[in-house]
Length: 229
Ligand code: HEM
Image (cartoon, rainbow, N blue to C red; front, top):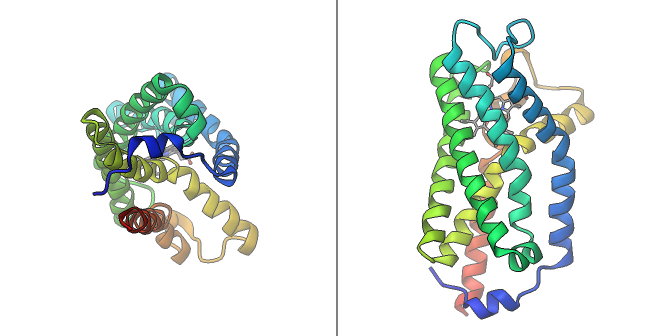
């Protein structure tokens, strides 16, 4: 993989539209982050049997896994956009490193917690959703480990590539809700059904992260071609 010279990388300025997009993304995600934080904290401290199918008083391990995954998920959804803001990264590298470690830890907890819940309880959408969310969790864990590994070894080009993949996965859960919100606004819930069994539901099980990962791969190929010229 072609290494971008560090002086060039440091001298590069982020375009305004990218900063604006990241800030808007973060602001839009905040209500969901708050929901996940509150729901996660409540589920870890109170009996929510009457309020949600996710809580089963007879399955404390599954409860701990799913509600801890929400807390960790909230953390990574909020921190991931901040990591891509160049001026913050350049001005406060120690903060970037600390937030990076928090995102890796959060991704491992969110990923492993979600996987444990799927293994112990199964999702509300059945086997297809088990596989779709299971793959999502596995990819999140893989990207977090690779980002950390390459960053620690000083392989900064690889670190950046994996960090970008990790970013789209970290905000993927929020994008899932955005897809549904927009779809309901536009169609009033066409092709959605009980138990996430409608055609739209089934596509969404993968469409909140795979297309975005594919776009990242296209972007990385494009960048490599340019820097190889
Ligand atoms: C990236 C950050 C994440 C956040 C903020 C997050 C947040 C949440 C929240 C708040 C819920 C409860 C449902 C709701 O209120 O909408 C939920 C459900 C769930 N999440 Fe996540 N999540 C994240 C990542 C993941 C990952 C990586 C996995 C896969 C391992 C996962 C698997 C699940 C499962 C299986 C459910 C329960 C689905 C059901 O109702 O059966 N989540 N998540």
